[in-house]
Amino acid sequence: MSRSIGSILYWTGVLILFVFMFNILGRCQESFWTKERKVETTVLVAESITDGVTTQMWLRSSPKHGELNPLARPLVTRGNAGQVAASVLGVGVVLGVQYALHRTGHRRAANWAGRIA
Image (cartoon, rainbow, N blue to C red; front, top):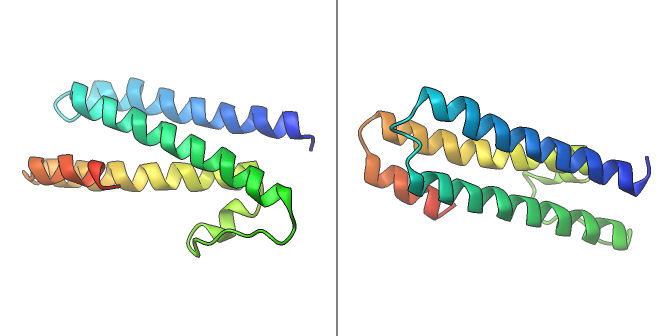
């Protein structure tokens, strides 16, 4: 797979994640998706994209380079598709924890859970 096709697949996956989060989930849980949470989630997704791109560039620059995170290593060493999966899982875990805290009445803790992620 050429580098440009892999890049297209990566950005397509990120776009699908972004559209899913803000269009479908936003309609179902309007009280959860405040303006502040949308901004924080957008920043988290942007950070995840930046981390994914730089990680893949680092891994491709030399065969000696490797992923240091043992939880992400099995995914990100498999190229762009694995990187997208790791990014989706990371963002999904943060949003899942926030939503669980929000639904159980711990709204301030839910706000901080996203900020410290």
